[in-house]
Structure formats: structure tokens, C-alpha cells
Image (cartoon, rainbow, N blue to C red; front, side, top):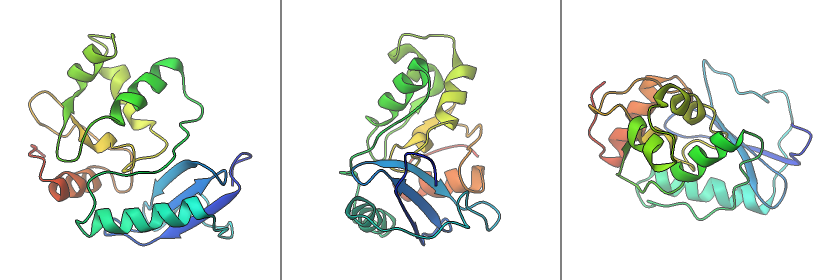
Amino acid sequence: MTSTATSLIRVSSPLGRLELTSDEEQILSLSIERGGHLPLDGAPEVHSPVLDEAARQLGEYFAGRRTAFDLPVRLAGGTEFQQAVWNRLAQIGFGEFLSYGELGLEIGRPGSGRAIGGAVGANPVPIIIACHRVLASNGRITGYSGGNGIPTKVWLLDHEGIGHVA
């Protein structure tokens, strides 16, 4: 576990196993299994109320019964620029999407699409902070750093009914 994380759980999902960490009060990270592995596979699980609630809400999301998360998240680390991107990601609603260019304009950084993409990809809490809802201006999927990459993003977009070009 990271030096600030005190709790860790793993839950099953249609995308594979998910691994969540918290500091007892706020969620710090969510990782999606890639190639059968999670970052903290060797660490024992330590439950906490916030992680158990996150597991419940994620189960509802994957079952199609939840469209918004009501969880405390601490977006630790990251530059001021990344923090601005992550905070805007948190405002994109279920079934909605933004282009990288729109996101850049909204945070006052027009023309910084590549940097926006890097910040989106560095999001420490995917799914809950929905970085999958960002697409190219033509609706094309240009990448995804979580889980198995583009197939993971396709699943999430399809689950939310967001049209896209793979």
C-alpha cells in the first residue's frame, strides 16, 4: 500500500478485478486489472467503511442501477494542471462526454490536447472520476490507460450509452 493508504479492497467487476485504496475517510485510488494483475496484488485486504461503500456503489453502477457516485475522493498528488483536469472530469455526468479540446477550453488551456490526454490518463480514480467520458472531437477513442486499454473504455462507454468511434 502507499504511505498514505491505510485500507485496501479488491472487488469483481465486468472489467476484471478492481483494487481500491483509502485513507479511512477518502478514496485515494482505483485500479482496473490488467493482464490478470493489480498494482498491490501482494498486499492483504484491509476493509474500511468508505471502501465497503465504494464497492456497493460500484456494484450498483455495473448492474445499471447507479448513474452517479456519492463517495469522498481525495485526488492527491498531481500538478495544478492535472488537478484542474481531474476536477472537471468529476463534473461530467453519466452518459455525457467532452472532447479533449473542449476540456482544454473549459480549464483555460486551449490547444493543449496532448497535455490534457496525459492528465486524463493519470487520473488516480477512474470510473468514479469518469475519465472514460473524454473522446476526440470526432467521437473517436484515442486511448485509455485503465484496465486493458481501449476495450475497457469501449465497455464503459457502451454501458453508459455514449456513442463513439473505436
